[in-house]
Image (cartoon, rainbow, N blue to C red; front, top):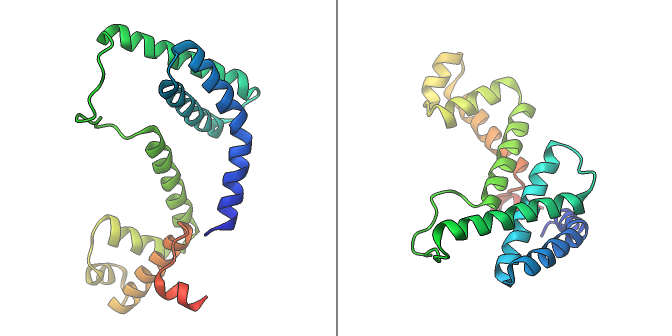
Length: 176
């Protein structure tokens, strides 16, 4: 259990809970359905978190209500277009959910930062091995290194990446 992550999650919950509650109440009044109000509130917060990455939000309540109002209007337009037809769970959307998109962007940012922190040679070897799928022997020949040296760079690079993503292997857990 990561205490820092839990504390950060609690702070985020404390920060966004009033906005979420206001947006949920607004959507419930407009739509009359708790399930849709919950969906609107979640989508609103996800969009606000994305928006906040681009800059400071001056009025989170105003922005939250504006986003929620747009989502409610979008719901009514969609319902009018489709005539209130319920979507089937048997036909899942091919698009990732909004939270998966946010997680993916965060993972890319973490990966990019971890690669930038690596020594140039280690980064080059990791990219050649994991992205271009070159063999250790081919990398060694092109860079004038021994195969063992390339293997060590790959191992250390993967450890750096695991560390950046907060993952530890069983051997590392045992040593702590």
